Image 1 (tube, rainbow, N blue to C red):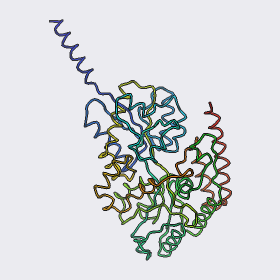
Image 2 (image 1 turned 45 degrees about the vertical axis):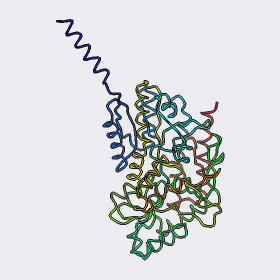
Image 3 (image 1 turned 180 degrees about the vertical axis):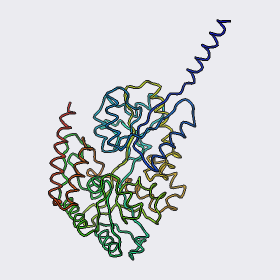
Image 4 (image 1 turned 90 degrees about the vertical axis):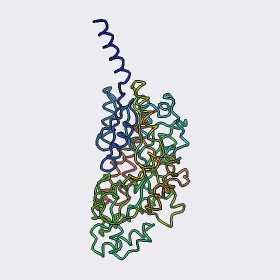
Length: 434
């Protein structure tokens, strides 16, 4: 009897082991509508199969989650998947022992993975010089221009002919102010929108070595006459109340949703929040440019984040990661994520599916980000990949804030960004040589 009972217990134990789920941790930085979508994606994947379970964990802002992951890696308890914003890419690429290339994870698990299936500007950014794709494109975005159409109508502005150039933006801002609007224009992610994307949109370098894509010895050149002219123009708009600074990162977005600010340059990934929460008619348009600059507009650069696979995990965990990435790559999944959030459809198949569904025709402007990104790139506009860029972004914020407050000229601030930023680039190059 005892032998029979032991056999039964052993059989039950083996059955339990055979059906034990492999649980993987996914650390992310998504909030509001985008955070809801992350939870939904994990829940849908978990419901479709029983072998693996993805647990999404919100770890604060992008810089906070990256810092937490580095500490966790050193302590031996890093997450399986880490969402890293695009400015952390060079740092992650240089952290060779800390990550496993996504192409290796997928091939080891026997999953089909073709970098050519992804939007070229997206795939290229996360690919090493040897052609190996290092991270999985997830919430890729770019910079676009949002307009409150109700505010425009009240100011007597033509909502069918939105401002396309910076001079037109200034004129629209003046009319908005004259109609009683206290905040005609604001700017989110100022370093990304007004220096990085501004540079590639005008086919102008922000840094040498093709903006860092050709090597770690790149240096900032953000004090060109064009950059100075643009920041000077924004400073003059700030003095006259046409542009109102509302804080760092995406903090200014809340002022657009509330109706306080009528125009904003920010991420295409802001679309889901506006569509759900704005109580007014709005439009999504292209990033403004200067019409007298040769080659403008060119193309904007990638933003958002990708998913990195951390090293030191067991094979079953990597199989779980590969299964989840395979699910995320499905055209239907990508198309739904794109429609709900405004992030780019990362695969060409998902873009075609969205187009065929009639979504772009029914929601004019939602294809703006895609159209800005699928333009042919040049040696000056393919992307910006610099080491220590999280810290450089903080320097950009500090220096530009001095300009908006009237404490520094545009030239002084941009010179300081170059000087302080290049010190960090030199430090990064020394730390990762060899």
